[in-house]
Length: 418
Image (cartoon, rainbow, N blue to C red; front, side, top):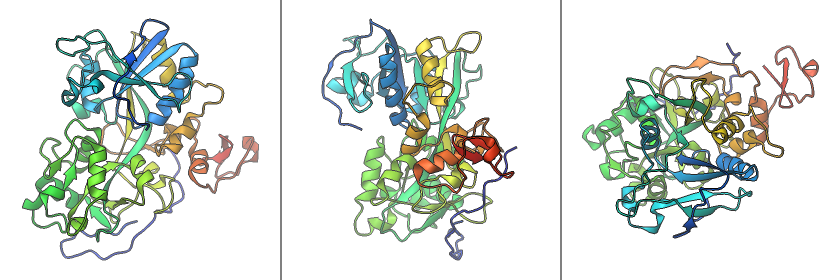
């Protein structure tokens, strides 16, 4: 069991209203066309999934290119990708893109994480499918069981858990709302304007959310206990469109508009959008993911006070011994998890810069989205190092454990940890 981090959640003091909904709060532009992908020379690693850890992915992809492993990446919904890899089905294009130059574009980084290039996957010209090209790795923001029941398990596919990421409810910066409870969110998104009790979110056209294939939507649904297919309000198939509509709200819509998104995206848009404090069921106060409104330490998320979070799941096919069948997939996963190293590549720093949290900085874990939390102590903790990368830490620096105090006896990543 891990020891508790210092108790320093950031609190907003506010009285509960009559309806009990008030809370005490404790990439680069893509090209329109490209040359065919070279999938014949070197080892090819085709990855599909949301861009939750895109900075980590492109950093590793650039280094693997130098090892003669070509990483090709396509943005793809979490649950569709999960179902495809378990069922050995290709990651077919978005129906809205079929017939357009973008339908088969994938990205790659030939030795430089800042030099994204694109190429066209081969496909069947008649139905625009990619029957011979299965994803080697699928990334997902949710557990496979959030997407489907899988009564026979995942077969030859294994789920490797990567960095954690938070999600939050957002409003326009000028909105009068400061916080939201789980009960209020349940009624807002479960019944919308029909509930007629959750002010100011009473207009279904400005109650915004993603679609059932979205990892974000599924995390919120699991956390609140809502059916992901029966959300009220306005469904959007693009996070950028949702964020734009919240940020661009005017007039009465400034108060009636609400949405939700990945916190790593919101961290970069704090001047344009405002995250609401969130009070979960049975909590007596609400929390932000970070310890203060201006910090990026994700301390309340890392210690379990802020409950709306998941992890990036790295799904790949494995052999009978549980090892990825592709050497490149094994190398990629080990680099993400920190069990392999490449000189000059720091995945923890890449994750910190991206607003996601390496597993070694987490003090809690769960085995299902929205499920109960369990305490954990990483074998090589990096919470202090993570904090130093995103702002500041009060941990003592060290070069060996003999320099560390009894209350933080382990020297890890240059800091005294529990």
